[in-house]
Image 1 (cartoon, rainbow, N blue to C red):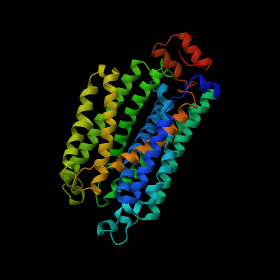
Image 2: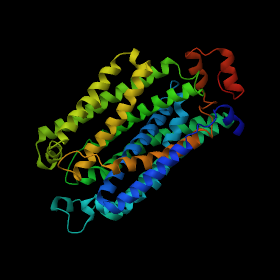
Image 3: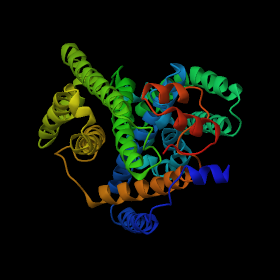
Length: 407
């Protein structure tokens, strides 16, 4: 297996020092911020955490979708998506600061600070149940990510059909568990910042953004691995068109969910719902809202409508980075008004926490990426995919039977 991983992986890039510097610098700045301004620190940490959580959950959903539909187009990118989803156990450890500082985030945890309408929710909003839900969400996500990745690696070793069937069965159960736990997490960790607010669409809201940004990450990583060599013959123009179509789909779906939530609350005109948007129309939050209208939907939508733009890297790479920025801004729009109701403020702790969490996850991802084959070499759909994208038959045989990379 080690020799297989070596043949399918290039030499590790010299990024360790850069990432190490990023982690140490971010940790030092975050620790200083914890003592200087603990409330700003915990909000900045939550913002960075939810951004990377959305990427990992979105990747887990795409992996599950691959198995549920027995897709062939996503075979070549499945392995690194499995590695991204397997970062969820790492995020469980990185959640510890938020768990310890939760009373500084959630007003309903402070005794005597809970309004009457929140007190009615005390059966749900209490500390023991909050931490129980937290443990449950991470346990389910980590187990799903582990099982799907483990079966995939075992499939590389033996090629037995049992691993394919197991991944399908786990995906069938996992799609339901993921939908439930993702909704619980979004409600607890973001909506819970203003517990008086009601929204029946908030889980779908977070889900749409998660798959959206995860697809953008997948596009960029595929381009990098294609140019580096491991996916040179496994990432044709058709794959990038399919990723672009998925990105366009969730651009539209995300906009639909955002607009539907706003429209329902606007028509209902109930104070316990409208105050959330009224707060976000004050000061510079109004400008952030306009940025989300045009940047979160209109600009990506118009660019992705063209078929040819989906395969032009000089367009798609900047667009993917822009989508990541819009996802961060959208999460800031959801989280930060509870701390800065007067308007949007970018704090240096936002960058420090982002660097710390992103650096730790990047190190783990790269370590796993180079430890295993870059693509599932014995997936039953791989040969179908190679035939469709017109890889020469000798190269197919070499990849399928000799465990060697396509060249």
